[in-house]
Length: 137
Image (cartoon, rainbow, N blue to C red):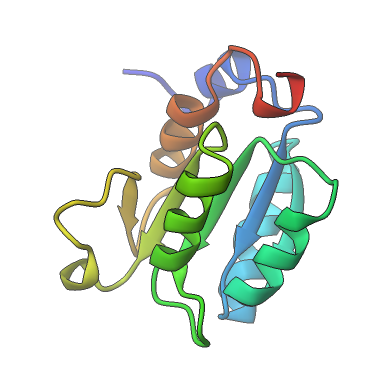
């Protein structure tokens, strides 16, 4: 069974850019700080609208990590659909405390809250892997 240390060897963390979207400021900061300790570059957005603004800028990301149930007009599901249509090579991982809101046709991975760091890192590794990042394509 892989350990957190094993994930550190397999995932090229330095320079890998994650856009983290969550309207819960405390949780967003906690996840962001944890990922930064693991040597990811993290940009935070407090809403789906804020995430779209960042995604439409020239700043490239390797992964989007978003809460599914965001307040506002653009929730995590809308964000995942927007990415699928406009940036299909950019992986997204959704996190939620409400698995009952996950539609059966959703293809993006969903991590139920609460979760452990190793579960999140495993999904990030699977989404980004050791291969070429979307920014390098």
